[in-house]
Image (cartoon, rainbow, N blue to C red):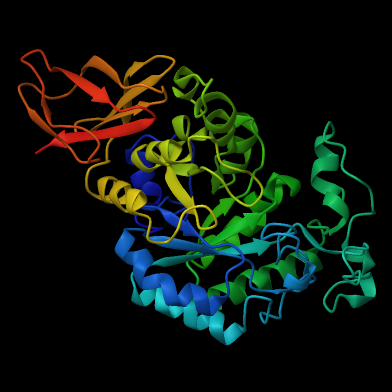
Amino acid sequence: MLKGIGALGAAVFGTATSVSSSAAVGDSAVYQYYHTDWTEVTATLETVAQQGYDAIQVPPAHRSRLDRSHQNGVTDPPLGYQPVDLTDFNSVFGTEAEYEAMVQEAHNQGLDVVADAVINHMAANDDFRDAPGITFEDLPRFSERDFHPKDDINYDDPESVEDDWLVGLKDLKQQSEYVRGELQNYVQKYADLGVDGIRWDAAKHVPESFFADYANQWADDLDLWTVGEVLDGDVSVCQGYADTGMSVTDYPLYYTMKEETFHSGGDMQALDGAGMVNQSPFQAFTFVSNHDSGPPDYEKLAYAYILTYEGYPRVYSNRISVDDDDIRNLLWIRNNLASGDAQTRHVDQDLYVYERKGNLLVGLNRASGQRSKWVPTSWTNQALNDYSGNAGNISTNGDSWVQITVPATSWVCYAPE
C-alpha cells in the first residue's frame, strides 16, 4: 500500500533525502483513470485489484468550469483542472456521494485512492468553445486580492514560473494566509472522504516553500501520501520538490524513454542511470504517458521497463485497458519477483539487461531482430525460469554467467524456479 514503506524503510534502503512518514512509494503500481465517471471507476475496481495494482489515481473531484460539451477529443481540453469551487464536490464526473462510494469500494478491494488536487490556480476567464469565462466575482471562496496579478509565464524566470498565470488560469497567492486556509480545507475534505494520497497538480508552478512549510505537512498530519506533478526534464528541479517531503512525477525518465530510447532510432544506453528513479527511487513516480504527454513508439516495452524497475509506476487508462494481459503478467512479476536494488548487467544501443539484485533478471530489446548476450548474474549453476512467457528457460554456469535471448522489441524476465 501507499504508506507501506515509510520513512524508516526509505532510510534503510538508502534514499538520499529525508521523506515524511507518509511520503513513501507503494508496493505495486497505480492505475490512473482520466475523464472517467465515478460510477464507471467503481464498476472496474474488482478487475483493477485482480490485475495486481495497489492503488488508483482519479481526476479532481471539485466543481470545475468545463464539461464534456466543450471537448474536441478525450484529452482536449482536460476536465476538472479549472476549479470554480473547491468546497463543492459535485462535478462533471459525478456527485460527492458517488465519489465517496468509489473510495469505499476501492478500499473494499484492497486499493488505495490518490486524489488529484488543483492548488495552483482557479478557472480562466477566456472565450473557449462557448464556455462562459469565470470572473473573480464568479468564485464563491476567493476574490481578486487572493491571486497574483495577471501576467503570462516567462519560463526563463523561476519566479514567473511560480507566480504568473499558467495558460490564463488565475494564479492563487499561496503567500496569503487566507488562501492557505482554503487550500487546507480542500485537502481536509479529500481526507474526510477517505482518500489515501494526494497528487498536487501543476506543482512546478507553486513555490517549493509552500509544499515544505504547509501542503505536505497538512497531508502528513492526515496520513496522506503525496506526489507532485513537476513537469520538468531536469532531475535537479524535480529533486528540489522531492526534498520538500513528497514523491514527484519522473518527467526526466519519461523524456528519456520518449525521445531517446523506445523508438526505432533510439539508444538503450540513454536509459542506464536516467531519471529521478536512479537518483531517488523511493520518491520517483514513473510513467509512460498521460493526458499531457504521449507514449513512446514502443509503449509496451517502456511499460516492461517501469513495471520491473525501481520506483512507483503508474499505468494510464486511456492507453492501457483495465484488463490488459501483458500488464497483468508484468504486475505479477513486479509483485512477486521485482525487489532489490537495480544493477545494470549489460547495455548497448539495442539491449538493456539489469538485475533486481538476487531476485530478477530483465532483458529489454529495442531492435527489430532478436538479441542474445552473455551476462553476469548473482546465481551460480542455477536454473532460471522466464516468467514473461517470451523465451525459454535458461541456467547460469559455474561462473554465474548466463546467455539470454530477447525477442525483437520485447522483453524477458528471469528468476530462479
